[in-house]
Image 1 (cartoon, one colour):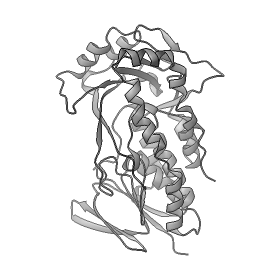
Image 2 (cartoon, helix red, strand yellow; image 1 turned 180 degrees about the vertical axis):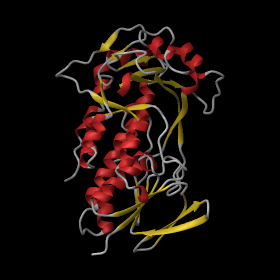
Image 3 (cartoon, one colour; image 1 turned 60 degrees about the vertical axis):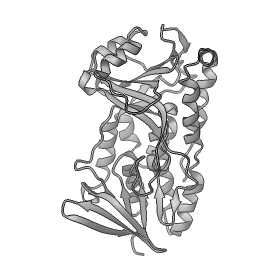
Image 4 (cartoon, one colour; image 1 turned 180 degrees about the horizontal axis):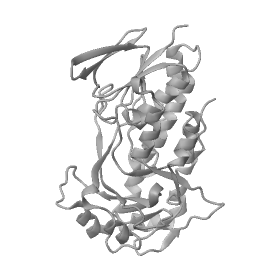
Length: 368
């Protein structure tokens, strides 16, 4: 039987995970990455058990764990003055795994042969028939075309494969990583202020990733000094928050307006299938964005394994990938980032309920 072929638009976490899964399923895969140097910028993030199971299903679980550090931030919640609303307890609470985006990208990229990844190759057009897909992509030598049985759109919230309009969610986020060994140990925590949330996760190499999210009515707000602005907002909050900010180089701070996508009716159009942010970009408040991308890749690979008809397999994938997580992630900050004193008071009194509402997402298991 002729080996089936797939083109993956996007060489980020979701795209590489899809490529790994499809190759394990026996497919020939080409990844088209628009950047000249495939890699990942950014800071840290955390992963729940559902994502770790997806990594295992993709065959990268051991390396995933090796670059990760347990974090208690999912069950250690505090107020700005340091009071514990909820405290992680061994045997009762589940530790998440935190890692640096660049470390995870490097692990995934190592599982995709170099000849399968084309850099400086941004998809500009996609055409399809009942039997295949043709992707046009730009290169330094002009437009090129590639044909495949399936095209996977993993090119992010600003996807070219299936253009949609991002929706600004009135949220601004700063991210940073404290220098090695400067503030250590840190077990991981979240601090809930009124209209603001700070969090921290330990990373390998005695580094600590931190973030601050706030309400922001308009996108594109400029700041002369991002670190100074973060200090102004949380500089008097409990330890080790001031120390983490002091240990973070000011020129390394990342600032992003947070947008998501309105839920799509389907992630499949003929032989084009979406995953990751291209399918369901979401706010970070459930810490599920990258988790869901790994789930997507594991499910897609499982459905496209064997001699199953491609339309049938893609329809099965579509049925399994619910928009519920995306909707929950949009709803969460309406409450957790509320500037209302009444809502904040209720939130802090119902902490355990608020913290556990996402835990049911962690029970996902990959298809066999």
